[in-house]
Image (cartoon, rainbow, N blue to C red; front, top):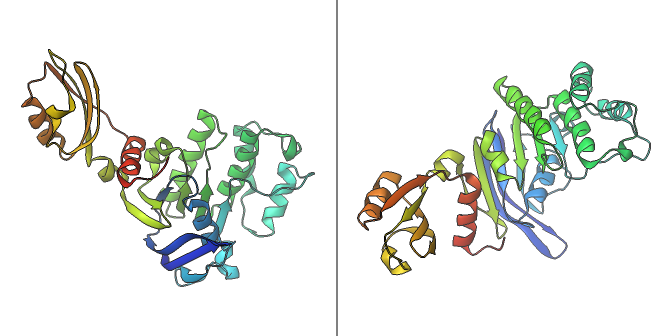
Length: 293
């Protein structure tokens, strides 16, 4: 288990995280979401031991991320991973083997093959997506106990993303890995994360099960025989409302069956419930809290 207690950290004069408290069970895939500058990357760097917290602490089963034994269990893939001008995928493997002696060469080569990466090509000459694929192959070959990912899907094509997500799920299902992933691609997180945390204004503003969080809202499209205005929907627990003459799209907080009954009482000619995903739910939360997208 990862335990974060009263964690605070500043970069220069700016407070980035303040009194963060969080417990992350083993074999969990946790999505970290928030607007730009919320502190997602800083949290991952603290968890990886790259930064030392100003106050509070992080424990991996009662061990600090600064401990050498703990570091062997952690693989951190930042948004801008390190490599030298002359490194190739092969020399990168040798470099990382210094820190992770048990890294699986067969798995690494297999993933490079799946991504069609030249193992002796210069990494600096690869596209952003190809560089990301190389480091993903490294992360998955290490098979770490704790995998920390910052914008892991950035630059990946759909097939690469699918290979990556399937491999992560396999690691977790085998009971070997806990994954923390910060991403702006909320639809990607919804696909396979168990839980999420929302960071805003230096603190964890919300957290929980993704499916349950999305289930708090429901979306409907309605058509009326005559033009309507916002007053018709007064008293409803409205998260968002768009009206175009006779046509309405509305997102409501509450049970979908109950909300349908209340909408039907307004006598629409047509009413259809529409799917609502984690990204839409996040946007509604951002607007509700007055955050800036």
